[in-house]
Length: 213
Image (cartoon, rainbow, N blue to C red):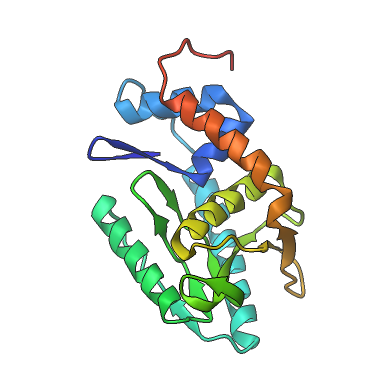
């Protein structure tokens, strides 16, 4: 959750947090406005988790490379609205060029920011031609969890807006040996996601009494 100008920019992580606990969203909004200071965190624990996540992501990237896909990597430099827009334009340009695999792409429209690990080129029809893209995300969990599925729905929703076509699948790539991407049918989840998204957008846009934690 961040502010770009006067616009509140939401993310897949924000939606997942709201789905688990609306009070978490109240606290996030308070921290964003400066009325509440975020609590400290265990830096070593966070760094270890990030290290494990990056190692798994690297293994997944090598798995896709080994399958013969050429990779286009989108630079993710820290920054605000302008940096996100530049990365989103670079992602769209890679899609228009027909990249087989886009790593660390950015999907951003000024209101929602999505950062899927991978965009996989597949058969189909889109505004780019006789192909389209599907989202894949590397996850340390060995099974598909609700928060991860909601994140993939956000990315897929953003992706549909860019390529003007809804993919048939998105993919979770759990930590396993060998690497085995897990397909999930988009149509099975999008109705629930859209309902959750409407509730979330309505919640962050209203004056409210704090909910019970």
